[in-house]
Length: 522
Image (cartoon, rainbow, N blue to C red):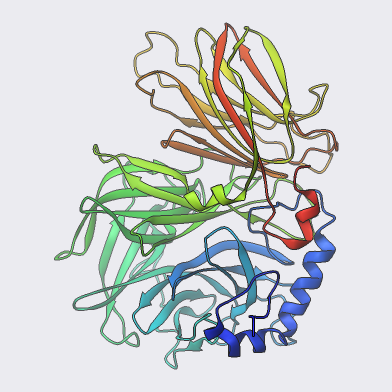
């Protein structure tokens, strides 16, 4: 007999027992009803993961188990059991390809803790170990062994790393967001937090290191890394993800409550258990609390890819559901040790028909609408020669009169400027006429010049999400909320001088949600 579809998906026959149980799960029935009800919201994305209902925050525990990808996230559902109302759970979704996601029941419910906050997972041959922060309690362990990771068993010794009294500088250690991994002599975990001052004021980031032989008893053995000259005063090292990225290097992808997503790349000394940073970078450059990149989760998959995902905060007030996830990103290192990034290649499976735009001149101080390309769920790839323009780029989600538009552009460095670098910008100052959208400055990140000085853009537009990749060196993300139904156009522009479009291809993107498929191509 053919497998029973679940939310438009099918699972292999070996999951029959779990699939049958899921078909009767009240949470999933509630989620399905919620997704249908929320389908009328014009800002629900077609191909980015969004919560089935309620509030979603940090992604947690991204992992690959039994050939499937699992993503957990801080989840405040609508309602729930009487004992868990208004308490954060670990939401749960599963995918065969990192792109098409299926809701599963919440994985972790609060018991000894008030909320189940952030943490990461460790995949072992016979089980998956989750380590998470329980508020007002400490860091805790849960394990699961079933094919869909539905049945989690919390450790009887939880919290295995309890909170302890600390002095004014945060010593001996604060207990907060953990990451867990395993070495030959046992399990290791870090607690991403801060020391020596106040958060967002004058503190420094620190990741305290713990070791255990049995997951139950943990010894504090020092620090993996401490914030130095790379970070601003007031930044912490929350939501850490510590994995090998190749060439004998590790990358720690983490979150600062002052400046959001960041990373260290360096060598990990297994004798001293210290990360020696060689490179530092940011994933976010503006105000993350108003519609920008937030916190990460990461894993290394069975192809050896270092894969990360972030949540993106809302940029509008009064929403009945909050936040979306970015597309999963593949990170790797160049020969010179610098970080490369691009969306996972699986996203290309969502492409519809291709539209190809001929090369053309872009005169200075003009906008050229591209009538062939239109829609609110698009992938666009463009190669532009900036020429003499001081700013050149592409506008998306544009109304025919240009009153609403989100502008993506290259800001060229001043000729001859010592230390000057080109910059990538997303500007949403004209993106929406709504009164409930927060004001914010543009998101601007640094670029290195390509050898041929061409701007290579890869833009993903998904109704209220814009993700922009430049080559494999930079990605910026913002939320945007056009108010007009006809704000779906695309235009090229240049300022201060002429530029030239060398090539442009665009695809309308398919929906990963059955209830939103009627919006494909719109």
